[in-house]
Image 1 (cartoon, rainbow, N blue to C red):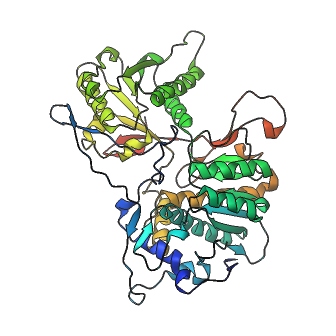
Image 2 (image 1 turned 45 degrees about the vertical axis):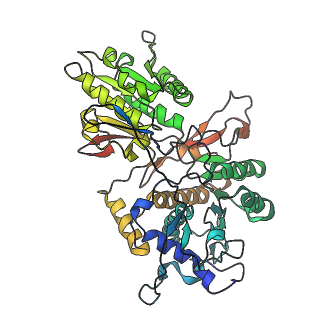
Image 3 (image 1 turned 90 degrees about the vertical axis):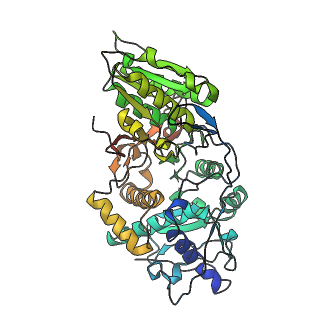
Amino acid sequence: MISAPNRLPRSNGNSTLWLFVLISSLLFASCELFKKLPDNQGTRPNEDDLGEIQPPTKVDPETGELLPVTVLVEKMDTIKWKELSTDRFPPITSLGDDQLPDPLSGDLPGLTPLSGKGPHIAMLLPFMSDRYSASSPNFYETSKWAIHFYCGVKLAIEDLEKEGISFQLDLFDSKASEDEVSRLLSTDSRFQQADLIIGPYRSTNLKLVAEFGKRYEVPIVSPYSAASGISSENPYFIQVNPSLKAHCTAITNHVRERYSADQVVLVVRNQPDELSRLQYFQDANRAFFTYADTARLQEYIVSDNSADYNTIDVTPYLQSDKKMVFIIPSWANESFVYSLLRKIKLAKTNLSEVVVYGMPRWMEFEQIMDYDLYEDLDVHVSSSFYSDDFDESVKAFNRRYFGAFGELPLEEAFVGYEVVRYFVHQIKEEGDKFLERLDSKDATNLYTTYQFRKIVDMPMVSDDFRRRFGRYENEYVHILEFKDYYFQPATD
């Protein structure tokens, strides 16, 4: 059985309700608010991040011409909420009042097994407790990712208890601050004593934790970041979210298992980060070289000037007797993608069938309302997440989550649930050798398959296990197709 005693005294009665208020305000808020977490500092996203889309133009659906638009955007930092009567809306008692941490203490108490035995896990998440005030109607948005992730963790703990598995979980608030993360790592001995550290969210903070893990030989699990440059030559760093290179490789493999190289065209804008992605596809294509066939994939580079999108011409790449495949590793400019898809649709008439492969962010596009384009062009995308709402296991998880928290689970809840279950099992089964055997422990779960592999950053220069590779990365990527007006696993 797992309980959650407080390590520090509470400052006052009202502050002890902070986690309940955060969870309640989040889970009963409009689902429209729960989109991918923005960068609160406004920094330019890493090129490996499949970042949010901010198209500067729109396309006239009748003429196909690009039209200038004025977009008034106000960044949403907070969620407005109302204080509700505790008589009419009682607290969610399934969380347990004794598990509610004190945001004023400067530290969040963890969840510890009564036996005091088992793996020791430290979890560092951006709860942003320092920005919450019981007297303020504003709730800092960054906290929502941590809350939903933690709700999934809560369910994982219940399941592990039923299996008779106990472990110690120390919960910390990163506050999305490099200073706070540095302070915690340097002053709290529980991090060095941990068998595993999970988190944090932001890449800048993750770099600090990854280097800490490398120095003290503590395995670090990154549940979110897809960036490939977080830490180098670090065999203690485990990346759950596949990198951009993994997505490009998965798309290439799916395409080349079905089509020859002369049927494939890579299309990008003449923009540095998009041009650099071409090499990922060409490198993955080499695995399909034979003595008689060493053909590279065709490349079509489009001007980065939005005024030139109307001049896009894919006709030279179409063939009357072959199906053609267009791979478009672009997502930052939705207008470009829409213009390109429309040009492909118009050009393919009476010439050839086509298949289009895109990136995960395509599933979140807001400008492209003509989803017949996706159907007509047989659009496929890569994705690190897919849960089948018709699957009995997923339906059971949805019902259970709703019963506990009053809301259907978001992606973060699935990730929190599966990450904790998987790694606690690995530590219990393999002990301190679990890292060395991680690449042989593939496991399919509710939203993906964990298929961790050693990523080599540079040629091997030593036989020492700790120097042979750069990190572990989950390389499993879903390939989804748009069929019957929704994305589902590709069957072709």
